[in-house]
Length: 362
Length: 162
Image (cartoon, rainbow over all chains, first blue to last red):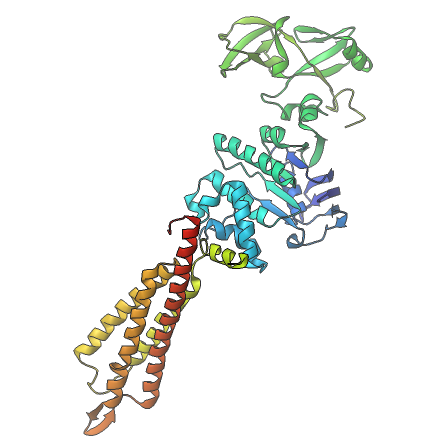
């Protein structure tokens, strides 16, 4: 059992730069939480504070109800897996995996059992006599994970563990981490800037920007109901399209386009009548049927889908740029004219960027 | 065989025989002490024979062979354990060459008979050679035991020794 409560944590460096602001999160036992955000948003700093590698400037950290805010890293019963594996090159895989337990002077026979069990889980049994330099990047990362597993920690912390791997290996190792989580049923915190990793791995995602938590929720919640414009633009690939639009009676009016609103959308936008808002439409929600004119400037065939980029409403401006993900193989040429429609729409307050209808939750 | 013993044997599949390897290196160290003491002596012209050249050559060969044995026994190679025994026997035989012969000899220096080797140096050299041989024997015996145990264990697992 490992329940982690992170209460109002701040990180302020000696030069008064604040990296993390009022971070709050309750991690349930066995949950896999992914901290996602762009570089410099404070996600790794948060993880390092949890691990005890950085001091916590304010707030409290509780593990199973016990305050460990000031506890040294070695007493926190957490294991961290780093991006660069941090393996000892002169030791064999077996010795690397056994190292932390050897330092603790555990019984060698017990260490042996634990290392073999971890190697079995990670498919490293045949590699135990090799040196790290003889393994591939994915295998090395598995060794790093194995080193954590043998310790049987209460919480696993992963700091961008797949960043050094190529795309194919990243996908495979990601699936292995997911299987590992299911098998160990361990509490895990995982930091990444890759939203695909976040969406595929997480039980819940914490989306961060500039040291602030933007939204905490399940992958579907973040994708389908983003709390604000930042989350909407960060989650989803290609990112969401945004347009300036004014709320009119029963429709939205933008530069060169008009979009009809259904009853629920009308009710939602009633307080914004006559005001400008940001309209968000995901590329996959851009429909081939519709009456909004679009001039194509780029066509990317991905096999199953085609990404079409263009401008809508006959206005060739950045604000009218649109990316659409159409099913199947399309052969649009530069300058082709077509018409599109908008399916699922997202509305954001122009000033605050908060999703309209979610102001109370933000 | 109880479980603890089996695990202990299985551990050898992934851990080195540092015990035997360490003793082989220790044997080299005592040999170094031995030849530093011998070659530091300069009494008349007693040492200026072909024997000193052969001794230097043998010391080089010994250090190389002992080092190779150290690496071999570390990986449970049975042959290197036997090589360590041979080297140990030679270290004992060496007692009868330099220390004994030098201790028994005298040279005339300005018409005065001078002992080539004093009692203190004689005992010290014997101790170095005995310690060097003892280290090799201990390392070899442990190496043989462990190598055989590992081979037997691997046979039960149907795994070929590396």
